[in-house]
Length: 65
Image 1: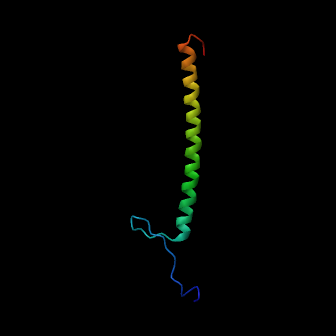
Image 2: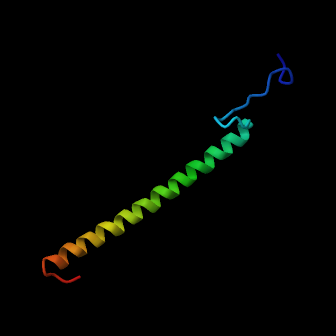
């Protein structure tokens, strides 16, 4: 079967929108990059929270910042 005779591969998400594989692949790449950025932001916020908690503990026990 030649390339022209083969049916085009399509990915259909639950919403019913038909997306070509190249578009789906690009969207997946963007989502992975976004996930990585969000993970880094979460790690930074967790670090800030841990530092604030330690400062609060020091203040409660009569220590300084």
